[in-house]
Length: 303
Ligand SMILES: O[C@H]1[C@H](O)[C@@H](O)[C@H](O)[C@@H](O)[C@H]1O
Ligand SMILES: [Fe+2]
Ligand SMILES: [Fe+2]
Image (cartoon, helix red, strand yellow):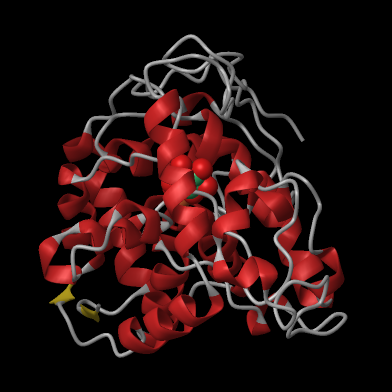
């Protein structure tokens, strides 16, 4: 296998420079992980003094206090009905032009930039995995929950890292101390290692804190996407850093979860480190993504 990729500058036509062996399924590519983010700090540093630190910490305080087992159950029931909006995947991408994520120390650009930066970076390194390009494009679409026609949920119920509810909050979760004010923290049904779950029960049976990940997972699933299970897994758990970065909660995983986790870890590199100030030319890449949307989704989806 040979992969030759020039510096992965976004917006440059790198595809033509790639030569690959078609038989090789998984290519680990030329993506160079940058050492610093757009603000001059290391990525995901929640303690360093920066223009975003205070807002991000306040975000996690509210998030950790309010994400309870009962809250998640209510939201899943409510949003699982998918009776709010009817639109295509691309229409949803365009809506994200108006969304900025307050939980993110590494990015203050409109979200559509992040979607395209992620998808295009993956496309360079994994040219044959078109499902993974599309997963990159859509993984954060659930952030439309912030908009009025989707109920205008507060940021703490939409963005940020996610974690299981119904069992103990792992110490590796960002700003863990704020869970002390979460009512579940002192509830013996929910505050043990297994809580309401059992060994190897499968993440599919675990309730995750409510936000853009679980919502988009429900949207994709209920609208009968033909994306592979790894794509759905990435969508539902991409913010679950306690799992894919810190290795916590593995006792709840089943065999399929372990298989899919490998793809999630590949995906995460692009999701996190492609965040930058370099813009993608939307009109230029649009036809390619429209063709993928047509392949894996119905023309209109229920949201
Ligand atoms: O702040 C970010 C952002 O909200 C992302 O969309 C999410 O996937 C990350 O986990 C989180 O750290
Ligand atoms: Fe996300
Ligand atoms: Fe993302």
